[in-house]
Length: 145
Image (cartoon, rainbow, N blue to C red; front, top):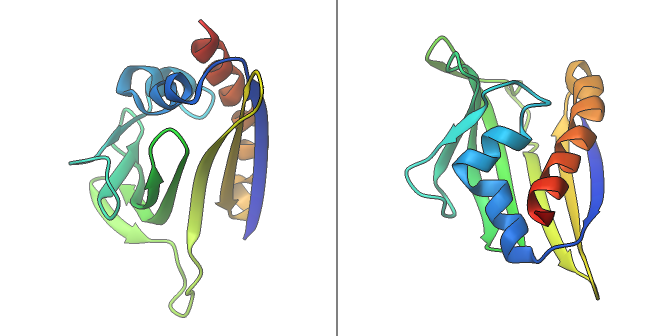
């Protein structure tokens, strides 16, 4: 497992960037580099709630919102995969590591620094290194409009 870090500076405010990140319509837009048509489902975007990050086929990642400070920081703990409607853990039996994905916004004088960190397994590392920078560029474009 490896933690990858991606950063971008955006000429906007934290509120607009946060909305770009988590508004369902713009989420589908900025996640295109990962999979066209991605979306998420949750009963409520609040700490402790389950959240599913899904592809158009309904397959994807099962996670929990583990930390949330609106317009500032969010952490998702990835719990497992969803394949053909079935949930399964990707952790080995004695694996107590938390697989996290975080987004942090830091207000600078005239801009905001967005930092995304993701814990990933080796088979996904190349995809993340290719897709995340492209996704951040889309977030920047949408947030600066």
